[in-house]
Length: 255
Length: 255
DNA sequence: TCTTTCATTCCGAAAAATGATAATATCATG
DNA sequence: CATGATATTATCATTTTTCGGAATGAAAGA
Picture 1 (spheres, rainbow over the protein chains, first blue to last red):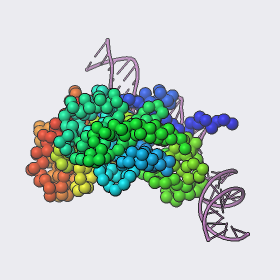
Picture 2 (picture 1 turned 180 degrees about the horizontal axis):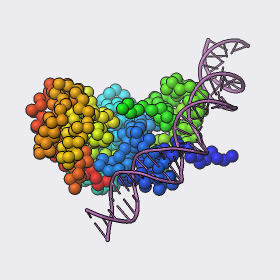
Picture 3 (picture 1 turned 60 degrees about the horizontal axis):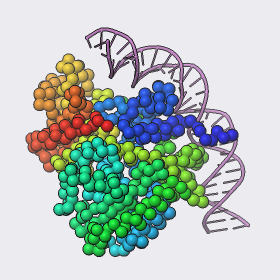
Picture 4 (picture 1 turned 120 degrees about the horizontal axis):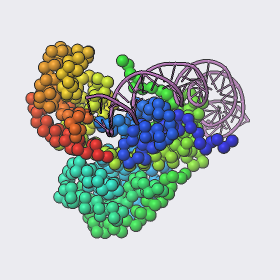
């Protein structure tokens, strides 16, 4: 009676389709989905239609090919947030915040904006307060830089041009070329720093939290008043952050 | 035409449960889920069991309360990644909304109705809220006018006669002849305005988003309370909108 | 201990998914 | 621009699930 392993109900098919669409690098047609999942063509259309009606998939503009839908993206962001707010992971966050003595936060990117899903402040509200639920721009946050740095080069360049590179301080990077260069640097190092680019007087850095197959799930970062830690001194936070990030990615798929 | 937006099939229930669990700050019991979603208790258990079997939900360590499961977390990470790769559309929309300081939306025509696929509101909900997924009539929206204006003349006339030209306000165009004249004007200018024709107190305008071969893909529009911007002043939005529309058609189709 | 609430099992009726067939629309290309 | 190839939509009898009331076992709280 080991039929438990591979069922194939409607729910399985629905998730298989969603998974397949999300896995793909580009938009996929209904026929491609049907072939990839060995579904009869009419059945595939019906299932995809169901998902589309619910906003879990949507057609790429001007085509009949499918991409992940708004509802699914919203749900996914919530899920990631919930996954990091469990007791154990919050404890990891608190531990690293205590170790480096500064406010730590976990952020994901959604709708081209950094959304913070969890944070621990170690003392009084001092520097930047990233309360869960708040959002910040991509180009002037460490988390945003990490996300962008992991895109394929072409997509990255397009995104840089599409983003409104609003100037928040006089160190905000507002030119596409400078941003691209910073991102290339970020890509190579695997982590990012921010030098008072969003809020005057606040510097920060972040490292990626990766899944076992090295997909970016979220970022772990720290924000600190420059009066206490200089931009250069930030480097000493990287190692503890990376250790905590590794611990987080380990626990994220267990317990 | 009461198209049932809110069905309640197994899939809806499954996602409602997942959504509810992800929304919660703490682990939830099956009974709580059942109560929150008004499900019979045995049904809730069965559905939750299904989700648990698939790893979409899992029991929090040692208890019988549920949290989001591994499969769901990995899927969510993939979804966020996929959405981010293809999110330049939203980035452009956000940029133009920020530039002109009003709510912008992208709409397409489907089944003789304007469906809004994406929107950015720049501040508080003020004027018209075109939430993605909502639909509006053709004859009293800028997007609808653009769509109709690009049809062959014969088809256009037929459509005008076939449409129910419902009167929503006292400026709504309800006679075929007046509509045809407006559409001819729209066709020549290449963009459209709406003067409180759908919602009293809300004016708007839109420009087409064209494919490389100049086919209409969608429309980019803005809606604003007339108290803030008069019908005449709308003209100053056209240029920025056209620039953004050009950027959209350039980047949208190359994923 | 007792009581209440929650979790689980069972099962016939009801609803939904399924996928063959067929009709239609769309696209590529000669 | 016609034409065949392919993709999409529609229809429908059949099969498979789901649904949730009633009953029962398990656990938590007083």
